[in-house]
Image (tube, rainbow, N blue to C red):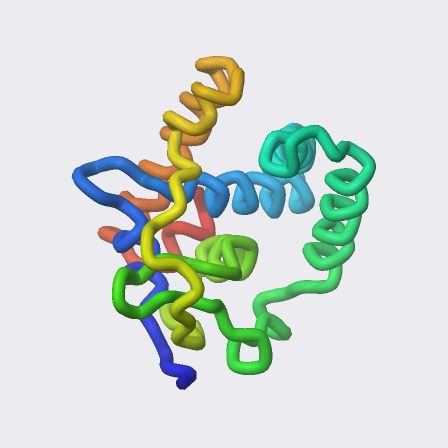
Length: 167
């Protein structure tokens, strides 16, 4: 079943007791910003995260990030289409199963709602929060960047989706 879901509701469901378990969304957001010249580290960070998540399969990680770069170069606010490519979410716990990068695009473009498909592949939430980054040897400066961007996104919800675009 595919339904429309509010981006804010999906993102906020990833935050439990103030802890965002899906900083991979923020990492993809930073990579999109990198493409648009708002930072010079987003894709490198995305590569490092992917390499850690794949346990050192660097060549595979490079191919995935190159593919993501191509996707970013082809994706615009006008052609971003989650109806054709919905996020996969376990609606019961609002956990994103597939689509952190699509969620990052929706946030970057300031899109209010996305299409999502209900899947029940996982019974528990994944944890790619700041503790995962700490445990996997990322510098505190990287963790601070992620936490600051997460807060800017959360603040953006209070000021409207358009304000997230200008972060």
